[in-house]
Length: 120
Image (cartoon, rainbow, N blue to C red):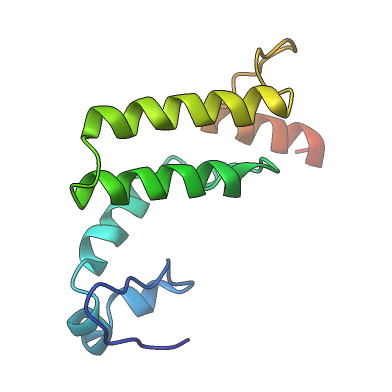
């Protein structure tokens, strides 16, 4: 793990909870308390969806957020562009319109499925 003390640089999620409590890391990354709190609020679902095109969607979203926050485009324009590009990416990969059965993937149902698959 590397520490990068550069203004504006954000290290991704740390793999160990103890890193979020490290005083030295908290000096470099003052948002760690908030990030850990948000992670603890999660319901057990995967943070990044297991979609093969996720990186494409994330790239569009990140670019549009950055452009809006830097004032290069308005928030409305960033949302419009994101919507258009998401539509193009998802339909081009035959992910919308969604024509297959959808599942209720709540944490409770996931636990029940795991239990049924493990014979418990």
